[in-house]
Length: 115
Length: 143
Image (cartoon, rainbow over all chains, first blue to last red; front, top):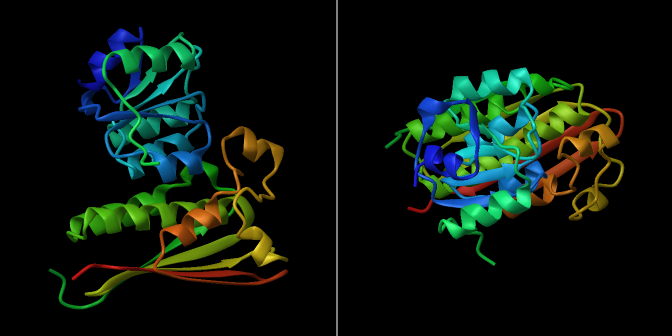
C-alpha cells in the first residue's frame, strides 16, 4: 500500500511531499526521536504528535515512507519546507494516535521491530 | 569500490535546531552514493544523527569527521562545550540532562550515547569539563 492510500484510510491530508508517495512496509509510533532512530525500519510510516522540523531528518535518515501527525496537529512551517525539500510525505489527521494505528493495523500494516 | 580512504569534515553550531540533522543526512547520502552496505549506512546514520543532536543541544560548536576506508567507516566528533562531568553516568540508558523544552520536542530520552555505542564496533569517549567532548566510532564493513 502506498502512503497516499494509507492516508485516505485515516482521513489524512497531505501537508507536504505528495510527490514522494512510496510503499508503506510497516509502521512505528513514538514521540521520542532517538527511539524512532533506533527502532523504526526503512519504509515504516511514523505516527507521532511531534510537529517540529527535526522530525524530517529522522524520517529521511531512516528512509521512512512518511510521517502522520495526529490530533489535527499542523506542522511548523520549517518542517513543511524541509519535507518538501526531502520529498517526504507529511500527513495530518484529526484522528488520535490510537485510532490511526488501529486502522493501519487493520489494513495489514505492522510494527517490525525485532524483539 | 573505493580504492583509498575518503575523508570529509562537517561543522555543527550549538542551538542550531533549524538545521539539525542536515550533517547526518549528508553523511548518509554520501555513504549511499559510495555503495556502502545498507546496514553499515544505517548504523552510521544513527551514530552521526545522535552525535549531531548532542552538539546542537549541548555544545557551542563542533566538528563531525567522516572517514571511509576499505574495511571500515569511522566518525570523529570534537566539540567545544561544557563537557560531561560523569561520562559513565552519561552512558547509562535513560540518563539525560536535557531541558524541559528539549524533552517536549522528543529529545532527552537518555538514548543518544547508548544508541551510539550500540551501533559502533569500536567506541571511545573522552570529555573535559569546561572544554569539550570527543567521540570516536568505527563500524567495520564486512569483507
